[in-house]
Image (cartoon, rainbow, N blue to C red):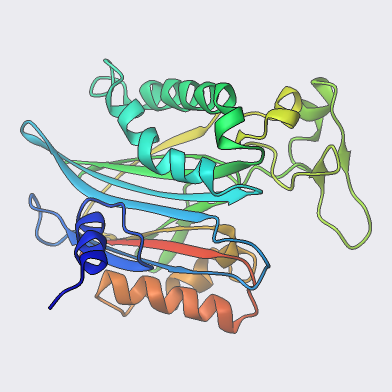
Length: 282
């Protein structure tokens, strides 16, 4: 007999809130579009700080594919909050259908403000995010803050859709706000000597020098589009975009592809928490 926890986990997986480390789903509008995700806890001595959202959602006559990776630092409460609230904030924007890009930017700002206001409850630290919204299987809107990444694969070529917000790249912006970027030997550049990303949700103590403004890009899905990868930096620290795509290009099951990519990153020596969503279009 199935236990209560297993039933709850299956329900959560179905709506994109799985507490398990793997799951899958399928579009009702286009039977060729499927998604799968997989998560692996890293070797660092802290609680798993990655969270995944993956769900197809009917809105009147439209279908949305909602996919995200949230990678926390010094916090698991903030990425968990993002998982529960960010897409709701986006879809509640009145101009979402007419201007999804501006709606996403506004929702990111509102969500970050709420997280900062709730700092006493959500704690210190913060989270990166990469989100992808697939509209009726035809239009993909990707947004990100931080270094989780979105990569799309077409005609054998992996193309990065998101932008890695590295402190070294945004030094002038950070210094213009009164902050500084450290660059100690043997370490990565860090905002005020602390954070290794230049944009993130939360991080109240650094917010004066840290942005939560997302980069947003729109990609049209055509017959040449094979799959999309969303993954936390535990993958990208050890694999290039093309290496990641090539290692799963022949795996038709999206969940198996996500699991294989994570295992490949582990074999390459990744020690970070790893989360991956694969959306297959063929």
